[in-house]
Image (spheres, rainbow, N blue to C red):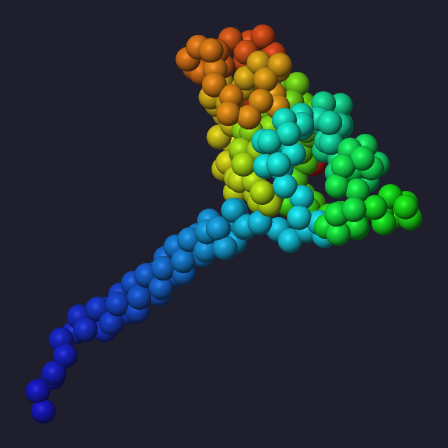
Length: 217
């Protein structure tokens, strides 16, 4: 019986198997990257359920309350505090005093029990972030939190992926603003951002920190 396959068939078969395995692996990696970068994984734009439907759009956008009134530690601490109930009651002991929506606030104040807010910007434990140093270097609230003054319910604006952080660390001149406009929403620079940013990088002594231990300590 004559030979059906040539002597090179075995080599071709082995090569085909290797290529198939590589292709499947590449597709798996690509699929994983797509999933990891998707809003399903990062939860960008997903409004988190809270014990009280607090609206930044109302308090910041309509009322014009400065971010630092509630998040009082951002300029001097490594974390941004969730305001104590007393801060809420500074206003709500006089307005909306009978609102059923605010009953948990009144109960919290009366019983001295903290409201269990759901954290929206929740970094992993292996990531170190210091609010105060970013504020002092001219990184505005809007830069990381987006137009919070338009959010009726709070969601996460950026992905918080490392590449997002590194873009700012490598090119701070693209993002920094004068300190007096840190909490300004809809901020527009008075001159081209690249000119202003370059000047502020020198004035605020901003370093382009890219080492691992800057954020992973």
